[in-house]
Length: 189
Image 1 (cartoon, helix red, strand yellow):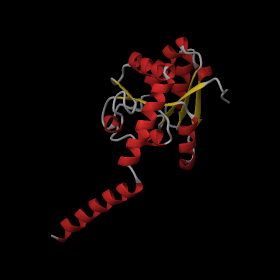
Image 2 (tube, helix red, strand yellow):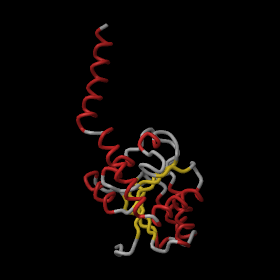
Image 3 (cartoon, one colour):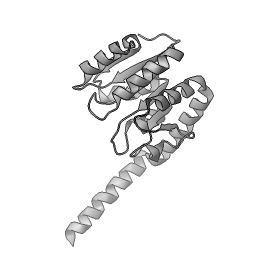
Image 4 (cartoon, helix red, strand yellow):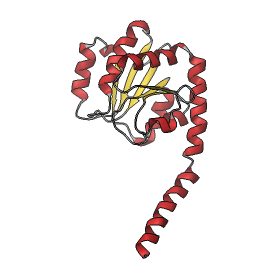
């Protein structure tokens, strides 16, 4: 349902407390005034769906926000790759899986600067970090990515390289194996 002129910003998360959808909606309202091509796609479902849909209506951006609902896990990379930008605005999360997933698909990322996000988002190198809850800064970072496609592409490429080096299948399997081996050895003692 998008046109070739639309700039799609995806937020992939359960529609639940602390996931930050309300901050994305506030930033979307601000951004939509200066960037009419901006469209927002929320992938995920949860108990806050009706409230978030109502909030989008009250902010006057319901026509710019789509709720895809819960999608099969196998479809997530396609949603991320089809988007022009990913946004991660959760208030509490370890290493957010969506950030490396988006980067591995070549999608630039804007995220709140907290918890595990800075492990993969190196500000202005592999993406943009903004202060948590700062919707003006969030809208500004989204606008910057829209306005400077070369910068956005370079952060996505650097992020893809970093994510691939940190989260290769071999590295992840070896790390998990090391944890289990250490636990097994502790149990033997």
